[in-house]
Image 1 (spheres, one colour):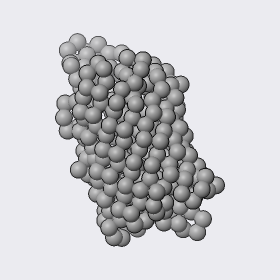
Image 2: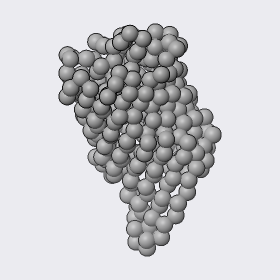
Image 3: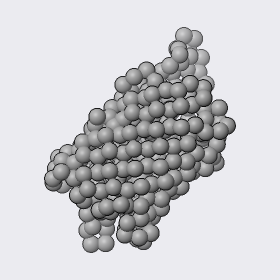
Length: 271
């Protein structure tokens, strides 16, 4: 239920990282959050700079087989540390998450909570690491199973993210993010193939505000039953300064296999 919720510690729509639109070098600052897109950007953080991206609240609702589950993640955070002008390392972690499940027929409910897994990633820009023009990157990652039963996967996983972004002009941009992973099985033992794609179109409403619309598709070949999820998303990002961002993401499921709804509120800051 949560693969597209993170790169985890990592869509026809707009999957445009808001900062990638305004993400050129500005003195010693290159501010290019992935948020609030479902996809990723080809932009990298400058060496010695740390960019922190965090969700204050990340809520997902899913109704299936007569039950309703609500997942709440608090403080889902990714730190991006520049190691060269075209490369960065990433560390992601969810400090706490809770899942509440309710039987729709009887009303009986249960709740479980705990910490999440840790994701380590490395992004290498192939072109235009500042996010201008045609920007592309490769991003391998591995997720370590340090989280609890509530939101942890129970086993390690690894994958590769391939973002491509094109800045059409000062206002419009398009992008695509492909991802292939060896994802942890739902029974928490072993791994299976999971592939996804996000396609998007973005529009800068002003120098500080960017609107994004996205479509995504994911094929998950879990041994318990393969599924294909399709999602649509819209988002809004506001950068009050050249080092800060506040953003909102709204996601809706387009088929029965996908979660019904997701709302994420958060932001980013560069140091």
